[in-house]
Length: 447
Image 1: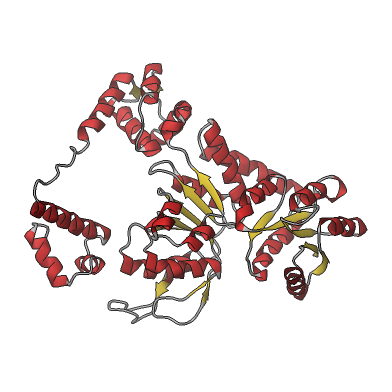
Image 2: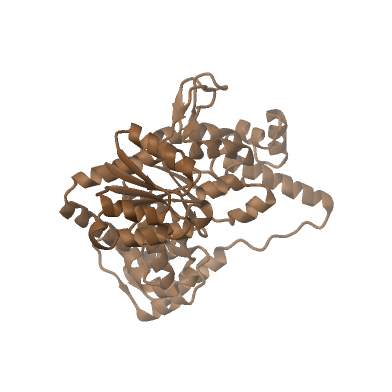
């Protein structure tokens, strides 16, 4: 392909041109936007790779001019620093093909160029129908007409068109898993796996093996080689759910795998390439965790390239009717149901601390209890039942020893849950000897 590189930084411009020429492309360079327009007027190009921040005509203005008139079919890839990500997102809306966040390795550009080359072999009709299908599917998967959900849908479409990492932010039950699946399904990686890692499910000593795999004999019980989630997601998307739960001591290796796209299995020394796209989710404010020293700042910036803030249900109650219809079609496929207007009013009065997940469970119980007829009275009973089933407020110990014992018991129970009942792993997670851990379990009747 014939490629124009536009960057006022000479070293980056020259090295990128050399590497692309070595890949067989015909490369022309320009030091700024004005020179780029001159080169565009002189000859035909397939792709323009341009920096965003440049003196005079910047990358956005250059993009606008390219997308007007006879050069509109030229694909544009933006190069941008982290602080300019919102502008890069705006560039996607204006027609840019994708963007890369500086600093990046020159070879990171190669897959984008390969995608452009593949697209050029596809017919125009095929590409147009794909775009229409994607927009319709996103609208179907992400339910809601509220302004907040309109912003979410627009970001989902942008994320599906690019290969940049995505951070999903929102409370439990808002639909982060659904958003991750939708982005993957409509990305160019859709033919490859979407692999989810529930980061909160694994004790600290197991998370590394889960992510990267391990070699035979690397630790007690490792009787054979095992592939990790990076291996299993090769070519596709790795979804790190609750990424804030990854222990600080394991974040450096994750950063390297994301940044350099390479990792080693536990007990191994052979570097393995990681061709995956990262989608991460969190229900916490990662910047607050950075300030507290429990989450690496550099890892945060690598994950938070494109961000989607998914609103809680209480902030988009106008979407309740659409959600009810959508959820009931899933709860009772092909069967009849009715929802009385008063029932919708009752649903709009609830605060929904469990968000869409809570709404789905409430509707399922009401549907079964009412044999398909959902009334306000049924919902009132269900919601009152939810309130009644909530655990009573915690009773605080009145003396120091009782407080110590209560805290110790809770730690033991939490470690057991996190390790899936594996007492050896739970003991290691708490820094205890297995024998001491078993004695503590016996003391509290947890053995």
